[in-house]
Length: 424
Image (cartoon, rainbow, N blue to C red; front, side, top):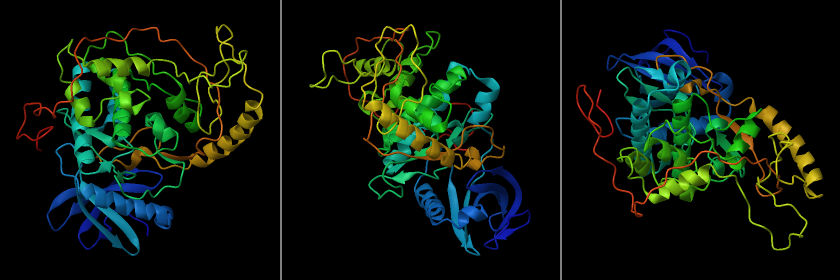
């Protein structure tokens, strides 16, 4: 089925104009002729509609999205199928994708960054409380209106906690620039994976740059595993700086332990940063070092990073490095084979869907597409270049304490009020 203006779905939704197009589907501004309101209708592209996996994920998006009710989450109104093709009806959100704001205005003011992060953290906590992990938190999936009110959308690859995965073992779903290390390694994404992705979004708002990147989607994903995070400037005030850096820790246990704790931390007074967040922030900028094997020969150099199933994609070591960069002999042929494998995987991954599936009234920009990257966990190791962290991380003497419940919603001028934001 080809969609065009004035097409009617379920004898109720009249398509008005296409507002976004992605690799998997299209988003249309439509008019609900029963309730007399404008809505966003997401439809699968004809080629995607023939793929059973895409259709099943589309149904899952409708099912999971309908379970979420929160002021900072885009509302799912309806789901249906017509002529063998499915469609999803959602709230039509006013505003622009955060990706557009970052492109046009980054570095963004710290107060604005804090407010957006706080709202989306509360949205994520609501999703996690409902047993849903988003798995694709990125600027293109956050819509911000002129008043600074933010909404999280596009649960297209979300997963219900405890539900059987629709992916194969070692398959990675998500956008490489925002993948948590555990996702990049093919492990199961959890609530703390969403917290990590939100920290990447925060870093990008503050600097205009993503903390990790590579020459390919695969190399970018692996950078999250092997490279220390670049430290935010001291010009970024606490608690914002330490909260974002702590959430970039590669070990999920060193991050804020929930999206709600992340939101709470953003509201702390300067100088009241919990010790465990300072520890996590320090770990995020520390080069990845693995333990020394018990049978390591005395003259064998210490490997500086271990990447399951992936060869080093970051280029050669700096000639002035003080580290010995010799590799064990068995590693060279293993890495060579894996490089060939990853080249094929990277080429296949280029067909991943676009970020443009956000139901906003503004077409999407050039944010990297969500992609699928296949890995085979735990089959080889590789040595990666390291860099010493040169900027100090704030310390704190605050004693350990359990994360407090989510704070009262931040009051802002405007009609109504609701948890985590104002009702529209």
